[in-house]
Image 1 (cartoon, rainbow, N blue to C red):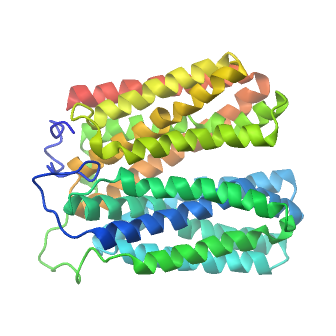
Image 2 (cartoon, helix red, strand yellow):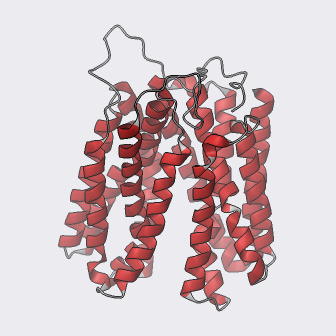
Length: 406
């Protein structure tokens, strides 16, 4: 990667990054660490690969109407905004990244089990909200854990994180296959089973810390993050680029169904995008040094700008695979860029807090973009995609601002 960003001196510059290998850095025996972390990512994204597309079907089978289902699905976005920064700060303060992941996985599993056992719709919503509270900080905490642990060992983040993407596809395909064999009312037990694997994987994680920090040890304040303009510009860029996917996540399947695509074709298009992301993650440790954090963010923004602009003009079927491959840029490159910046510029004692801040900002942008895309899509799909392209363009502007400030 490039040299640490100038202008981030009030944060922390680390020469070792979990996004890249560090030939001159420490080379500990990390087989078990990387393997167990990869298993945790796989377990967590297996849960996501089942829950995201199929949980609404289970809610419908339990008798919830469309409005209630929409409320339940929107709940995690709202919860994420308030819960993630609090939990992340406490995880940093007590040096308890692994412990937080274990507790969150256990609580989420128990809550979803209760949701599957109760019959009252109110009880189902309450149980799912509790599960959402427990799950919301997981990705931020696990990424912080990964950047600290892998960075200390001179290992790359991408080749470990890709197992989450692989498991996400497996969850989509596997649950879709099982849906032909079981009633929708039993889908919740697939979700519970995936959460059980995340509990086991969390318990198996290697602890990062041995004991509590000394009382006299000075802990960096999370306010340090908000005082750094480069951090804020990078966080805004990441949030805008990722938020530009809101329309695609929510309405691309509906658009393709209306165009006459069958389920297999739609599934292949989704899978192609994730596969492109996996390939980028697999080779991320070998990316040239010129592709620093801000450059990766800018590349992701350009990928999103091209992708959403093309989608606005109702592209022919032959062009859709190429546009889906751009997911490696619009999602993959922008995610790696944000992770690279956090790995290099944020002190270890603020790893989870920084992830939580970025996640919270992304949650706010994603929630707003989801609402906006729904309103615009009802009027014009082309207008909605152009709005998402504008978000990607704004993300590019923030990335360039971070480059200038740095």
